[in-house]
Every structure is written in C-alpha cells, then in structure tokens.
Length: 237
Image (cartoon, rainbow, N blue to C red; front, side, top):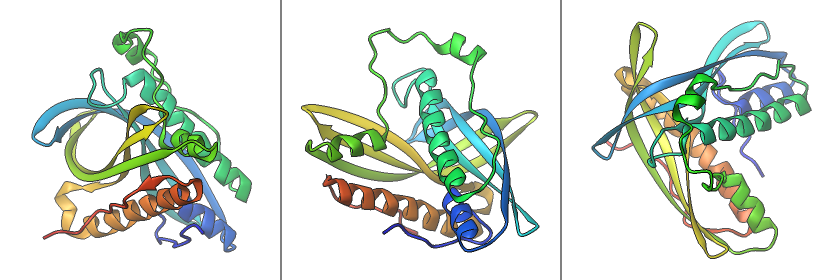
C-alpha cells in the first residue's frame, strides 16, 4: 500500500493527489526550466543540466509553490546524455499528468523541449542504447525476469545558474545499479533538494520527502519480486 502521508504545504505530486482525494479543491500550473548546474560529486566537479518543473498550486484558494527535478543530463558519462534526459524527464512528467488526470486535477499538459541544446550536445554514437528508467526495470521484473538492485544515496552540492543570479542547492540523489538479463544497468534519480543556505530548516523535510519516494519505489520492488537492500537518507550531524 502506497504511503498516503500528505505534506502541507504540498511538496509532491502525491500530496496534490491525496489532497484532491480528501476533498480539497486543487489546481496547478506548471512552468519549465532547463538549468545549467555545477555539481560536486565526491569531490569531482562537473556541469550538467537539470530539467526542473515548478508547480504553482492553489489548494482551497490558498497559493503554494514547489519544484520537482525530472532528470539530469550532461554531455559526458557521469549522467545520462542531455538528449536522453529530455526523454526521461517527459516520461516521468506524463506519469504525473496521468496521476493528476485520474483524480480530476486539471492541468495543461506541456512537455520539456531542448531544441538548440540538442543540436549542441547530440554528438553521442548512434548505437548508444536508450537509457532505461527504474520503472522499466520494475516492468522487466514483473515479466518474470530476475532483477537485483543495489541502492546508494548521496547529498550532492550544486550551484544552479539562473539569469543574472546563482542559487546554491543541495540535491538528494539516488543511485541504482541493476543486474538483469545478463547486463548491468545504472540509473540516477533526484529524490529531493533544498537551498543550501537554509539547510538547518529545509534539510529535515527534504529528507522526509526523499525517503518517502524511496519507500514508494521499494514497495514497487517488493511487488515485482526485485532483490534489493533498502537504503535511506540519514539526518547526520
């Protein structure tokens, strides 16, 4: 059974779905950004692009906003290629559209596009295999194939570059190493984030949200018969 905890103010699409299910009037408008971000991964700096969606939400006439990172792409092998990240982001975006549409939340169904960036970075070899999402591997397991997943979690420091300003942000990333069908796959997912300068107040809730997203995945793993060892984010000092 999925976690039905509702955060208020809402922090997840799941919160919007559960608020609507509980009888609230819920409406939202989405806006998209593809931001260049300087990451520091285990002391190895690199630049990538995050596919960010801002949810401007009205719940019973009261306004809120939260953001969700749908994918991360870069022109090297530290994360999916930028062109692949566009497809990953839109797949997860349409999953959220489906969830909201089913419960009766009306939203204009836009999508991420890259255009000039695709031309600039689309230099990967044509034979490169498409990147599978974690839900592709869950479906492989549901078809009866053996799937084993190793999970790792990490807090990643980053600097987001907006027009005329920068924003220091900490991302809560999940790393999944998957063994199935005689192959090893790798998948990354942003499970939460918070402004680094307000870590003391924002980090605890970001951890709760990220761990609930992990819990939802682990429930899917259990249902599909995937072998794994659950890992969660810890508060630390």
